[in-house]
Image 1: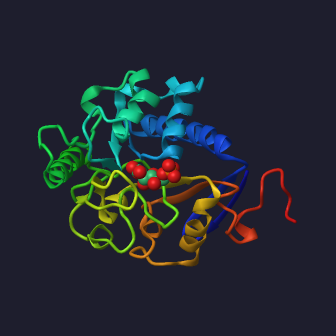
Image 2: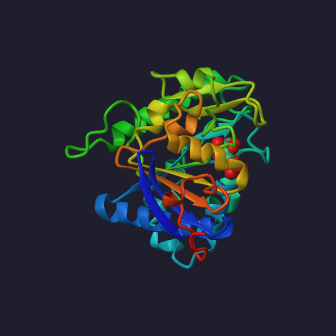
Image 3: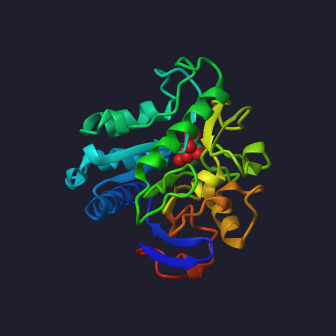
Length: 274
Ligand SMILES: O=C(O)[C@H](O)[C@@H](O)[C@H](O)[C@H](O)COP(=O)(O)O
């Protein structure tokens, strides 16, 4: 493992995708446990995608798993594929199979985005508006005298976000209306280059309410986008560049995804500089 820092955030590089998933699972267990020790509860925003789900699977397998008081954890999603509830493409379904159905979460504290066969039917705009309201309700519930929760989105303790090779994060894709959204916390997105085409996604204003944003990705296909974010490319062209936490932005990578970063930011684990 190696670590470094830049204006885009701290960078931690692991030797491969499996180590990245296991180490991030351990990191998340610790972060949630620490938040619960400090405040009595914790909140996490989950991501879809292979790396995000692999992290949840590693959490399920971890001997430290039950250091988290699952009954006092609020679970949200950064985005969701707008498909029927039983569709294997659903981020919620994958997260439940990987972890949530194996730990004693409080069902009332698992805040899934509506499926396309749910109460809002096939209207992703209605599903997005409902999730924005759910976030506002959660924000009111968590506002305290000492920690004001500004706006209508909770100050999530940790938000996991994946990224695509062209720089999307959540379901905010380059040069799309979602990348320009400055008011709403949740929007419907259509015609996404990554199938399924219709989704519901948090926007930058919501993402930037998170205390810590963890960008988690692996593989050579992501290396250009990772490096571009660290060169200062703008968030409309490269949405992952707009994913920042109020206290910390942490890039959790494998060596392939870090391959285009300057050496100063990727001293490799077990691979001393050439
Ligand atoms: O619902 C989704 O598809 C995700 O939220 C999306 O943002 C994903 O995290 C990235 O596309 C990375 O996916 P991989 O980790 O599978 O490359």
